[in-house]
Length: 306
Image 1 (tube, helix red, strand yellow):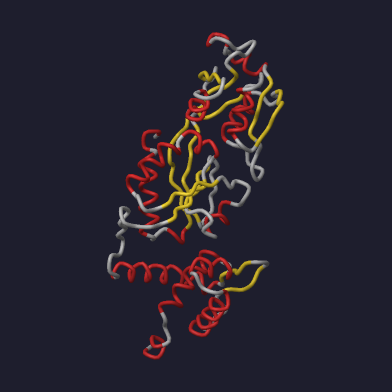
Image 2 (spheres, rainbow, N blue to C red; image 1 turned 180 degrees about the horizontal axis):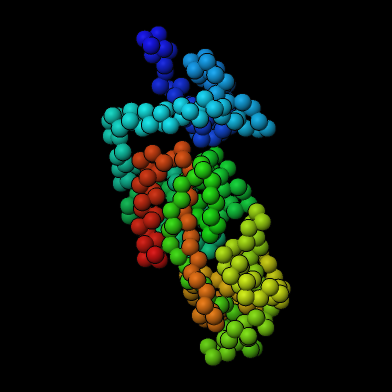
């Protein structure tokens, strides 16, 4: 036992912990700010320590062995306990910190919420930077694990074991069309039959998954007259503001666009449940004090939508 303890290096366990989360040498090196050869060397020492391969190559990744799965909960718990003993563990001073936080959010968040969001962020973290991206062309798990984003907003339930999720808020959906639409001029004109009689702008599926709003509408009428489709909800709303198309859209976005574009929005002419928006983050940032502050701060900003 004494000989085994002398061979234990806390850094090795840290590498093992991140390798279990990333299952990729390159990603692990990026997360730990190490070179890939250094991670490979640490893995070789871990294999010697545990007398097991621990990870085997599979395609571009590394698959944990049964032994790795067996020891992972104990290593993870041990590292968490050690972290609690360190000076300032769990503390983050937002007023003095100089961090760069990356938030991957829908394009409409930039239109509807960012001005207010940025003003509040500057009040709480005056020396840090909040960077907003709109990368829905990439796999969210890859985006978060590679640290291209710290937090990710999504309508879709991702259901990945490497991600944590929290319902951020629910969004009421409204019908949008241009203000001088030839057939939809007054609230009394907005009937279910009138809505489905128009040509529609719709959201494209992502990774073969339809957005909840499109699922709900498709269930009511499978053969809508689709004239325009886009992966960007802002493009859809703008198309409706400048044509005879109609669509369903988040109310917060419709309200903001209507301030600068000839857009009208009305309650949906039929029962439609609000759409939940989820906040995701990667396992590797779960215990970070800075990320924990960011998550809690962002959730607090969206409390008014809950």
